[in-house]
Image 1 (cartoon, rainbow over the protein chains, first blue to last red):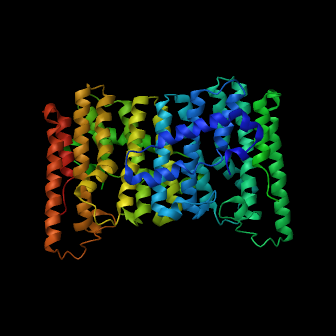
Image 2 (image 1 turned 180 degrees about the vertical axis):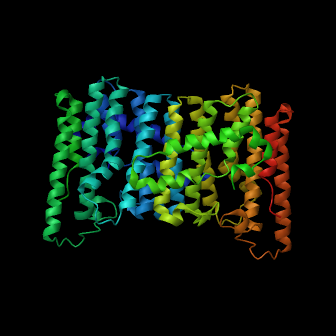
Image 3 (image 1 turned 120 degrees about the vertical axis):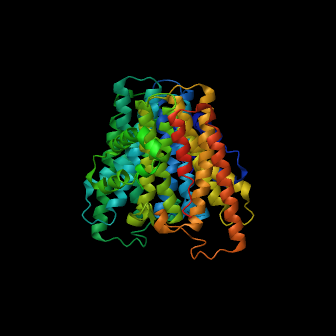
Length: 290
Length: 290
């Protein structure tokens, strides 16, 4: 999936800026060592939908023009995200993502672990060069929270007593807090007032919850050909039992719930075109292939 | 091995400060989530010889008293180091280290990868809270260099054409640059002049080279019971062939070479007791159990 498919409104509003983010990101990854060129090249060409960068840029766009700090922090955010994906694929032994072989598939788990570490270090290095301690603290704190969520998920894996509450806690930590801080950072960099920063945090948090539940539901009901990643582990043959149908219905209701909460956080910004684009983005990332 | 075994001089000079580093480090790792307590506890109780913290503290001590920033950055350095060890053990499938089961042995590779990520994020978060951009840049850059060295090692693994030059390049990146920057940071935090900071960088760089060659040699000639880690992969039965003996002799000569270079970097600081302690540290980490 390319950025173009994301949303028509955000496309026209931040298309140039997303291209700048990609360009800056590629520059940051440059490594003078030819022997590592294949790995670095892999990182440069595996940029996905840039959802987190889009949330950050559109949140910034709500308050005026996108500036250089928005672009550079959007790149840092995508680097952190890509690092977590590299390690996720090691942990889940994912063989393909976005229609391409994963790093662990190509070069083994060891190299994929190191490549993730390298990318995370480069992300923090890029962030440091901006000398914005307020931003750096939010992003390092976010990185630690993502790890906590992933550790919790791993620690509770196979525990049949895990309930809806724990699931929601895990996805908040591993996914939603990151989106929340992307929204907040876009506003902070635009020097928005505190209430507006909080509104964008809330938008991102609820968007992230809706997005992750959608993603998990696609893993169950979707096909690899549609999602571009190894999935469909539970209901691959599509013979749905009554409990499965009820579970899917419940998940769908939760997606609607969080998407509505996300959209309502933007109420104060109507009729700003960036607010419209954020709403369209919320619709687009919660669509099910059914 | 405890800190006490390290060196009698450094023991008396920085024993209290090393205890402070350990205390601060434990506080930074506190996590309110009981379900992760076992993992966090593991991190708190697997602090090793604290060599990198010792280099940083003694380098600082050369120029006067150790201050709060020395202590906190020494803790950050040990956190970064511990994170790399967690991932190293995943990559090498190490089953024991310092006489204890590794994290991947206890809980599997997945959890060990995540625990390393968590620790690295916490290290960066602790560093950020100090608001010292000069220090943060050096340490994030160091983290990226370590990853480059590890990736290079991994990419060239099994390549019979790899020569002494590549080996030295790899250990410089994955080990020596870290020691070098510990030396430099100790001096920088003490507000030493640039020449002195460079001298301590050189000390750490050469110490790191000597230390890593020693460590690799112990892996070949040492026993698990002596080193506390899984090792002795090549010459476990101690029947040494002539090529092996020549290789070991060459490695020993390199250890002496780098140790001497390290010690000569300290020439300008005689008869400062911290310089003496750094020299003793260089002797102590290059001792072979033969």
